[in-house]
Image (cartoon, rainbow over all chains, first blue to last red; front, side):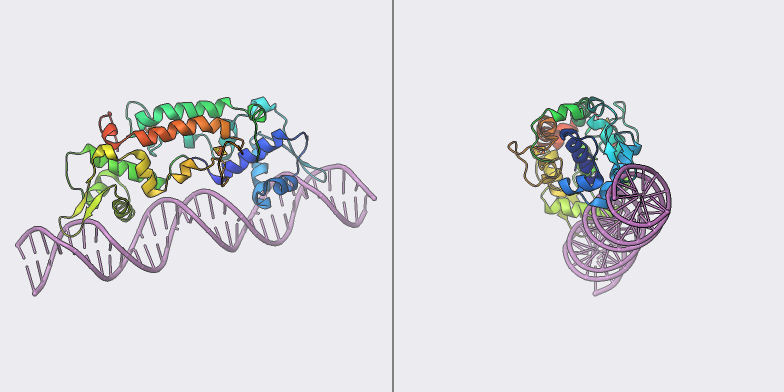
Length: 137
Length: 137
DNA sequence: CATAATTACTACACAAAAGTAGTATTTATT
DNA sequence: AATAAATACTACTTTTGTGTAGTAATTATG
Ligand code: SF4
Ligand code: SF4
């Protein structure tokens, strides 16, 4: 399962924006480029703006743009904005608390992969991704 | 997100069964021990039986038991049975094809973690888990 | 000032996942 | 043979995630 559809969309939108040499992006434009349902997209982008990943400009000629540096927006921050990183930090088997004192069946197995994965999410920024070869958004 | 509720249940059930010194388990017993909704559980276990993780015995004094060796049931096999490993092998950004020739934005980032994670899922069996210290199912 | 193009908001519709209920079938026990 | 205890099956309900529709608010343009 890994990611929700909404998180997929968020990552696709932001990495795409980061890859383009534009300042301002309308939802309509993103919609046409990425084929994400328009109305769902506007809500998502408004949401990303509220969470500080983007800033929004209302009215005619409005749109969305980055205000922070690309190197300040990590994958973890994006996920945090849309579904909350809790869903990754919490117990993989769904128990409330999650500690090594009271390990679930997947604890030892997941512990290491989890740490790696989260570190990657935290350390990889839009700027990093922008330097990769990406052929589709 | 990582795992679905159903996968969580499946792992909890099977690791719990593996940890007990019993041969046969009724759904009712598992339900009482693990607090998984009874009806949902019976369907899940019937399903696991169909997929070969368990075998079922009908009628009074019936139940579920392992037929294969614990070391032959990997986490990957369990996931395959309930939601299909495709959801882990497929593109993390939801594109149909998934190849290094046509990489998505998370390709390079996810590539490594994915390989590690899947390897872990494939290599870790119920027997392995049974040798860990697990304090809750 | 009127219009058009945009984001923001609210409510609803649809789909998938999770959970519930009832009944049929099988089999050991009495 | 009747009963009880278990799995198997089918259908429905609830909840959550995803998608749609309509309208309000904002602002540049003519
Ligand atoms: S795995 Fe351990 S740390 Fe992770 S999930 Fe379960 S109890 Fe928690
Ligand atoms: S990541 Fe690459 S290999 Fe993985 S997912 Fe996307 S295109 Fe596929």
